[in-house]
Amino acid sequence: MSAPALAILGTGMVTGVGLTAPAACAAMRCAIDNFQETRFMDAGGEWLLGCEVPLAQPWRGRTKLVKMLAMALQECLDGVPALDPASTPLILGVAEATRPGRLEGLDDALIPEVEAELGRRFHPGSRVIAGGRIAVAAGLWRARELLASRAIDRVIVAGVDGLLIAPTLAAFEARDRLLTSQNSNGFIPGEAAAALVVELARPSEAPQLLCMGLGFGTEPAHVEAEDQPLRADGLVDAIRGALAEVGSTLAATDFRIVDVSGEQYGFKEAALALGRLLRERKAEYDIWHPADCIGEVGAAIGAVMLGVTRAAVTKAYAPGNHVLAHFGNDDGRRAAAILSYQPVRAS
Image (cartoon, rainbow, N blue to C red; front, side, top):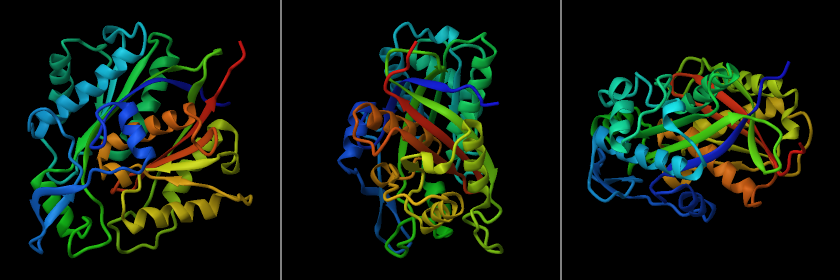
C-alpha cells in the first residue's frame, strides 16, 4: 500500500545568494554564488572561503539563525493564504548533536525565540529534529504522520543551520573536510534557512509539487570511516524505500537533486547508487547540487533542495516533472524522496 503523498504549498528561503525563495532560486538557476573570503584563516595562512547570508546587521551565533529562520517562515506565512501558525506545527531541522562546534540551545530555545521574533505562536505539536542534512526528510515523515491523523491540516517543515563558526571550521579543517589552500577535496561552508508548507495531497485544478515517497538507510562506510569500502548500501536502501512507497522505479524519474557539497565522496556515492539501481538506459540524467552556489548549509539543505525543485518545475526549466532527491549525514544516515510535479490534477 502506497503512503499518502504530501503537497508542497509554499516555500521560504534565506541564503547567501538571495533572501527570498524566488531570488535565491533565480540566482541558483544562473549558477551565481556568493563565495567570498571570510574572517577565518586556514592552517596555511590564507582566508577561508565561505557563503555568508548578508543581513541588515552583523548578527552571529543563534541570534542569526533565529533572524534567518524568521524571514523564511514569514515568507511562507505571507505566501500561503489562511495559514494560521497557531494551528500549524513547525517541524524544525537543526544540526545533529555530534556536529563540532554546535551552538547551544538549538533544541530547547530555537522555536520559542523564533516565535518571539515573529510575534506568533506555532501549534503545540511543534518540535525540533536534530538530524543534520537528513532532518527535513525526517520532518516530512513526521509531518505525514501528523497530517494522516486528520487533526492537523498543514505543517511547516523547516531547516536552519550555519557552519561559519570558528570551532566548527577548525574541526572540519583538522579532518581535511574543508576546501582550503592546502586541500582541494573539501566543501565551502555556508549558512541558510528554508521552509516548506505541506498538506496531504488532494485532487486540485492547480499545479502542485508532491512528495510521493520517503526512504531511509544507514551507510556503514560513511565519509569518515576508513576501514570499509564504499558500496552506497545506505543510500541504495533509502532510494529503494522511497521508490517502494511510490511503486515505481528509478528510471521513471527525470533528474536528481542532491546535497553533495564539493567533496569527492558524495559524488562517488551518488554514482555507485545510480549504477546499482538504474536498470534502464537514460540518454540524460542530470544531477543538481545547490551547494555549488550556497555552500554547505547543513540542516537547511533539504528544504533548499525541495524549494529549488518547486521553482524549477513550476517555471518549466527542469529536465522533467519526476525527481529523486537524496540526502546524507556524516554519521552514515541517509534519506531519499521521490517528488512529482502534477501540472493539473483532475477533480
